[in-house]
Image (cartoon, rainbow, N blue to C red):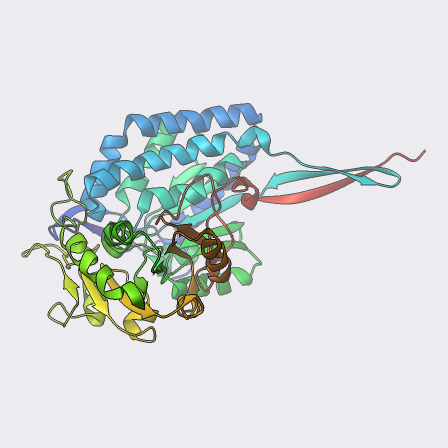
Length: 461
């Protein structure tokens, strides 16, 4: 299909992962509609960038306030389209609000520099890029949409958000709330569509200045190659196979109690999931004894129930992917329960194995972890780094010196000591190796959506 063909594409059926039922049907954007959206975005961006910084910040805060007023509505949509437990979904809607508030605070602090030079005055400016394409995933539809959209808007850009095919409903509602809050028409648009059609049209469009993509490493490489044709800026947040390293001197009870949440949250559909649990051999057996009841106590069930901790996988295809690594009747060290009947359910599963096993090196993206023993600090670091990924990880120890040494030695962008926290909007986030390119969030988030312009003013007569 060429750019200007208008043949209708098949609509996108949105399924409830807990039941498998179709809950909505959404039109899929064509390349011609992408082209028109880029034109609208470019026109809106020029006026948006010309606004006084205080006015731009004020409108973003109004958008945040509108989201805040509709947190419960957005959360219920997330439960239905993504199968997330309602507690998680409420946090996700609130996180989008918080990202807008945080970014709004940076609008009036985008300071340039005055650089001492001979013969004049040298100053720098942060100029917005223009139109930004944000291609968001299905695993965290609202937060990750906000990672790119909020700072891009704050920096003076327009945003076209393409949500995942399976989770477009919250994104569409956010676009409505943006207009209700007073953001200009065309400034924040949502285009549901197929990746190879709407996604490719955005990536290849000459009017798009930057692409922000979160998804698989395979697709990220394809997007990076396409962006290279027009030297587009690109930020990539890709796959992960993060380690959870437990040393013998750790608080084993706490490490074991917290481990299930590190790989079962969001049903394991998390690039930061600690799906490799590395345990020092001296305490391996004791750790496994503590881990089993913690995994089996992790509550799986109806996402609408506030007590639920883990819901279904996103789709039948994702369940088959997980099954391709571990059949549900395969031997396992620990196996939890999952509802039967309709929906895309899979039980929490813990395997024991070697660090070169397929399940220990490839991203499964499901509620599966592999426990691997190690003998000393050097071996723990070697195993932790024995993967093409480098996104996140945790280590558990009471030894401060070891915590610092191992944190510096593990090749990952986001590490936690005696914690599994990976993402905070106040701090930078991104991966090493094939886990991505660039950084999102943190104090420099807005700068990632600008060009630095240098101006020299001669003072010589």
